[in-house]
Image 1 (cartoon, rainbow, N blue to C red):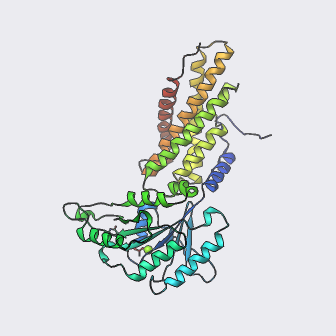
Image 2: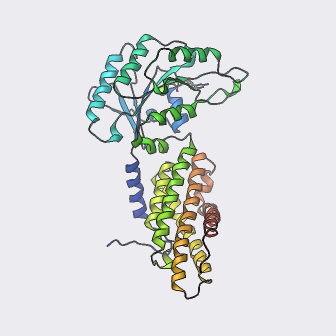
Image 3: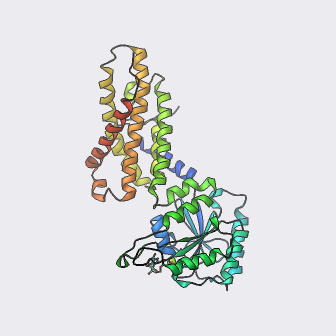
Amino acid sequence: MTTVTTGDDGFDRERFEQEFAAEARKIGRINIALFGKTGVGKSTLLNAVFGKDVTATGSGAPVTRGSRLHIHKDGFLGIIDNEGLEIGKDSADILGDLRDLIEVNRAGALADQVHLAWYCVRANDHRFEDTEADFVRGLAELGVPVVLVLTRALKTPAGDIHPETLEFAAYIESLDLPIVDGRVVITSAIGDPPMGFGEFGLQELLDCSFRAAPDGVQVAFVAAQQYDLERKAHEARKAIAAAVTAATAAGATPIPFSDAAVLVPIQIAMMVRIANLYDLGLQRSTALAITATTFATQAGRSLVTGLMKFVPGVNVAAMAISAGVAGAITYGMGEAWHLISRRIASGELDAAILADSEQLGRVFLEEFKRASASKLGKLPPSS
Ligand SMILES: Nc1nc2c(ncn2[C@@H]2O[C@H](COP(=O)(O)OP(=O)(O)O)[C@@H](O)[C@H]2O)c(=O)[nH]1
Ligand SMILES: [Mg+2]
């Protein structure tokens, strides 16, 4: 028997933390091998797409003994790089090390495999050597999908990608290399604001990479990247819909009304899923969950009490409403939790609000009430 220490606010911290960690493990990791000369903009690209340069945080463990490849792991992302080695001169060594890495992990967990390579060339270099083409072919032969990225690209004053860059891309594409979609992705990770243009090409880079990455790491990729928040929202909505369905089914069985608003396992599962999709981290998610639960429990209770006035003493009707209410409350929880998660990821909620649980609670509550009421309004009238 499981004892759930639901106090008045119904929050079981230990359980939440365990579920959070279990969900993070389940999501796994995407590993990207990153290649390109020093200064082409690899770190800047990582920052723009993942919100951090994982290679900058510590040296990363050597892949195998004596290997010149390094794997930097951070949450849902692993970056493999060849710091200090030169494509061309050291190609055989790099490919050999990568082959070792792939062989060692072939039978192992998906989270330890190499899922994708980004081969970066500075757009302005206008040079793509035979040794680089050979290297790209070598990567593809190892079974790693290669996205060929032109970095630090420039735009004309009219806002078009520089014609010479387009020519350079067309030249590389004419080589018929085994690259994803057969095409080159032209990017600028930070743009050049004084020159009048911002970042571009990152959405294409992500779309192309998502198409090439194995199914089993798609969610890790969604969680790791911080550029395309709509991908996160899409997954979060699926989690909310699943929880609402499950809660509605659970609500149809006679649960005590006092429990309708507390954090049932369905709601915890939904919350840890969404928090992980937005990569909020354990500590922050736990603190948020405490606030959310406190406010939702109060609101849920008054919602249920209000509804009960309309069905005095009719047990069957009460149970039917209970199913709808369980779904509506779960929907309200999900939408409010999602709103907070999304605003944190987009930087709309600053540290001051996050530290102020009253203020945060009000944001949560407003969305909770709006969403659960919209769901309740769609319930068939009870007879
Ligand atoms: N304007 C502009 N500068 C960039 C861009 N990407 C990188 N840089 C600059 O190029 C330099 C080298 O970038 P970095 O990311 O450190 O290259 P890495 O050695 O490949 O990791 C830095 O000064 C960056 O600010 C870009 O998209 N636009
Ligand atoms: Mg760097």
